[in-house]
Amino acid sequence: MITLTIVYVFFVVLFASFLQTLTGFGYALAAAPLLALAINPKDVVMLVLFTGLLVKTVMAWHTRHEGRFSDIILMFIASIAGALPGAFVMSYISNDSLKILIGIVLVVVTVLMYRRVTVRIENHRIAQAIVGLNSGFLASTTSLNGPPIVLYYMNEEKEKETIRANLARYFVLGNSASLVLSYFLGTLNVSNLATNVVVSIPALLIGFWIGEKVFAKVDGQMFRKVALGVISVSGMVSLGSGLWNWLH
Picture 1 (tube, rainbow, N blue to C red):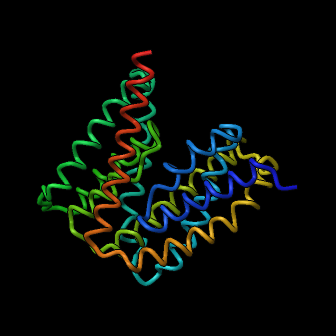
Picture 2: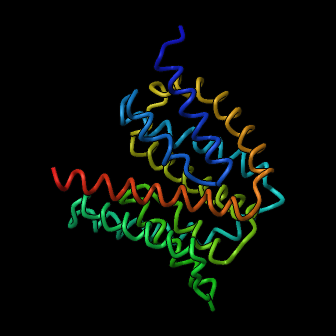
Picture 3: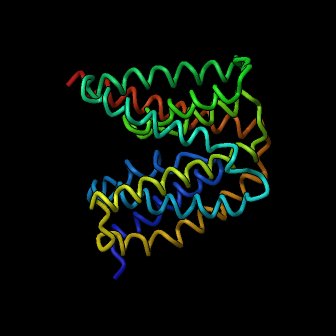
């Protein structure tokens, strides 16, 4: 039986898949808060991780000639290390204060990137390690782990195809690690996800198909504007959420 909730989940996943395919990131940013309005928040986390892994795996395969796992493996390893201090900081700083701080940083950096302010990097291995550490830190504190990677590649003025392809690989590793960890911790309940996963699969494919069509028509400048727009929105949402809870 098709219910209003099923229809809602379908279109939310379709939109999130489209955004992910177009920019290379933003799936969780779009899907998590919207799905939480209709289904159990605990189920949302697992559903976003699982369906996100599906669409990112499709993207990684589709872009197999445009990206390499070797380009992002250092950032991924560093992100695991960065998640540890993130968890430590969370025990000493309020979640709202952290959201405000991170929101301000993301908005400021995005403005600088819009103005074409770049940083000259001498040692790319060290830079990638720092980027990975920041991504892991943000992942464990706000779930916004994509912006540092995107900003790094934009600072290097990489092609849109390279940015998207390597982001897909980075998130495939990240989602896989999270699901494996959830399985061993006993928080992955497949039975609760079954219906929504079945509904999500066609939505993922349709969103991917539309995203690919739009991506092919978007030039490098427009891709940059869209990606920076998504990052600025995530920063403002983080800032607004922190301020709202802090003032109330």
